[in-house]
Length: 312
Ligand code: BDR
Ligand code: CA
Image 1: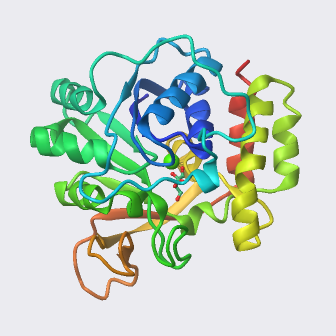
Image 2: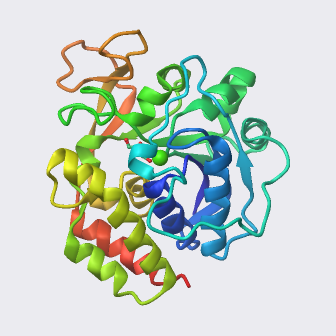
C-alpha cells in the first residue's frame, strides 16, 4: 500500500490523475489532496480538486489549499491550455464539501513530522511551491518522506511554455531548486515521457465507451484540453501529463528511465525554468533524480480505462 499525498493544480490532466488515484484504493491510501496555484489561481485549483473528489465519491479525503503565489517569481498561469476554469469540456459547479481547515503547507509539515520514517509518497503535479515552503518551515519533514514523484521537466523534447522550460518548473523554479537541494528521493516524469503517451482518438473513444460519468468526463476534458497541444505540436493526440505520475505509482513496470544529475535553472533569461539534465553523465556528479523517459502507451490507457470503469 502506498501512503500518498497528491499536491496539484487542477488542471485538466491533474483532474484525470486525481480520478485515477481515487479509483485505486487497493494500492493507494490517499491521505489528502493539497492544492497550489499553477494552471489557474489557487482558489480555482482548490474548487476543482473538491469537485473532482466529489465526482469520485471521495469527499472524506481532505483538500487543503496551499500557496497562492510562487516563492519569488511573478505568478504565471496556463489558462490558454486549461481554460479559465481549469477544467475544459465539463460543467463546473460549486462542490458540496468545503476545504479542510488549515493550509496545505502546515498540513504537510504536521503530517510528515508525525509520519513513520520514509513512509509517505508525495505526488507533485504542479509547481513545487508547497513542498518547498514546508521544507523551509521544517527541514525535518524529510524524514517522513519515502519519495517525491513529480511531473516536471523536459530534455530532448524541449519545453512547452518556453523553448526549453516545462510549465511546472517555469512556474516556480526556485521551489523546484529547493526540493532538489533537500535531497529527498526524487523521480521526474518529464515531457520526454508524457509526449509519447498520447490520447489518440481510438483511446479517447474507449474511455467514452466505458458508459459511466467518469469515462465521459475524462474523455471530454482530454478532448478539449488536447486541442492546444495538437495544434501547437502537430501531435496525433493530447498528452495526459499528470496522470502518468499516478500510473507510475500503480504500475511501475509500464515505465523505464535512468538515474541522472539534474539542476533547475532559476536565473533570469532564456533558460529560466529549464531542467538541465546531465543525460550522459558528463559532469561525473552523483545522480539526484530518477528520470522516467519511456512508457507503454497502450498499457497506460488500458490502466486508466480499467480504473475509471470502477467509478460512477
Ligand atoms: C504540466 O503543466 C501543467 O499545465 C499540467 O497540468 C502539467 O502538470 C505539463 O507541463
Ligand atoms: Ca498539473
